[in-house]
Image (cartoon, rainbow, N blue to C red; front, side, top):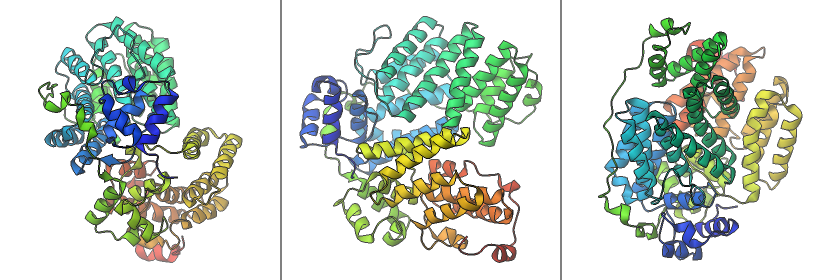
Length: 564
């Protein structure tokens, strides 16, 4: 089924929560604008749509509808800035935020709100010039959509994801300026809001983890080390199980500090080694944060050795302040513009920019005529096809939130639930979830069938799993030749299948095949036009190149057949 329209989703989201149009629109857009959107005579931009659905507790972004390329460019740069900030890669994050500023935030106050929040996060993670000033900037950002916000008053109505993140940051800044009472008050308000919201499972986990980080710091300030350690370990393990890597750096380090205070020196040593090694490997600034704190921990057994390891230089970035003079901040009518830059435009523009033919892009996914209709705007693709086309263009679907029907939502929820089951070895429950997915995929959706076959392969020994994965791969790449991987464009699912095959060969009696697959994937990552998120996804779980046995071309040709 095609992605739902703004009219259908917003009306359903509002009425299912029993909200009036006035309450839904307050601080986001005018009442008249929301009325026109719900009756179908007007459209909503992605930022407005996202804020409205989150206000009603439905955290989904309608993908995609933008005023123009500038609006989309701002959206994309904000998402890339988030990815870099999550990895504590601060200079690339700063560059993305500067792009948004240079584009004047596309004259969108919601884009400006997110940009201001991320700029404050950059300051906090690099060189905070004043926690009091950061608190003031965050409060100004929040008041763009919550003009009557006051820390001691419970929040009126559900919070959007951006609002939740800003208030979490306000709680953290309150702690740093010494107002512990305000900090815990905000955290409790957030917990109450989260318990009554209907955020998607992945978003809820992430928001809970971000809130827990502040709460752990609060507990450490009260010397409640046992409680701090338990909370840090709980969320650290959960984030790791679901491969939500962003909060893991802080959660692991906070768990290490809590363990040290509890007298668990061996566990603290293991945790700090883990977070420091991960930070160094991904060349992010969190390694410097660890060292700075450990210099004050004279009793920590490995602090001296860590001090000798080269660190990433600390850099100071220009301070961004709230600018109340911006005209669009007072203009709620900008959401009523016509939003003409949609999914077809994005796919067409990226494809032509990369010099890619329609046939090469759509092979194994859909017909050329269907892709032509999508690019012309005559047809909206389903969620699975939207994701696959974007991924083949090197754009991660993880930068967006999609809205689908109940069947689509159920399938993706089931797929998300498989992650922790794989690592914990819950074979029976895993099989049950896969069977539920197969029941949903029986309508001929070959992309869903591919996902089911890939998930099922985990339950079989290598000799049986490899044929299953090859069968899954042939659903979208019937003529794949592993020697010519660079002549193809691959989805994230296709890349995961190839990585899984390499992993299975690694533990079989044919390790040379594993090395060959890994080398091909690394070469693809190097040369394909992948965005930062797609590159990170491809690298996850891959061994370092130095540990992959080198193969001569002649040996590889003798050892690996074109069919795999």
